Image 1: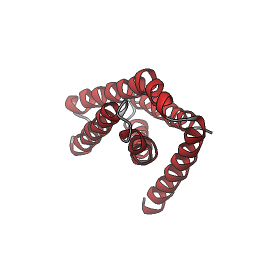
Image 2: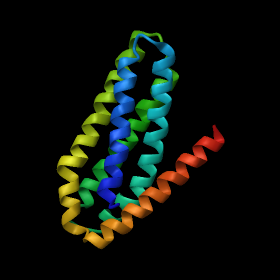
Image 3: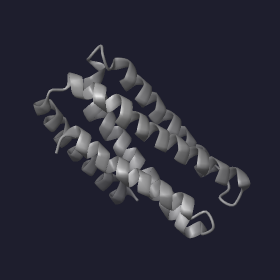
Image 4: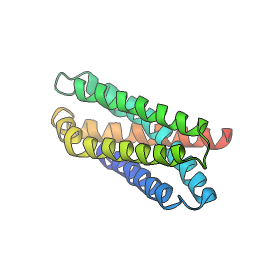
Length: 151
């Protein structure tokens, strides 16, 4: 599986968690579980993606700006998650913040898939795409296992 296929699998999981988070607005337990699953998937995805995808792309003049932009968006989403964790779940502010986080996640995924992936394909030859896909999957699985053993 190449890096793009691996990332798209995680993007699909993130979209599913976002949809469940929004559909669980009236059910605090369902919303809480969807938030935890989204948070865990985002954390593993971001770290693995930065190591296996963005770092190699920073080395290329044609993709350095996009890679830096995507990493900055990861940090923005992490800050939004932290704010959500500090806000009371039942408050109107919390529900508004959930909507903003979901919007940001969806924006980031769409931007990556539609703008960044085509540029990255130009600078990463197919064998490198496969190599990075394996690296991403290995790192993602390690991070998920680490989070599960800590949780």
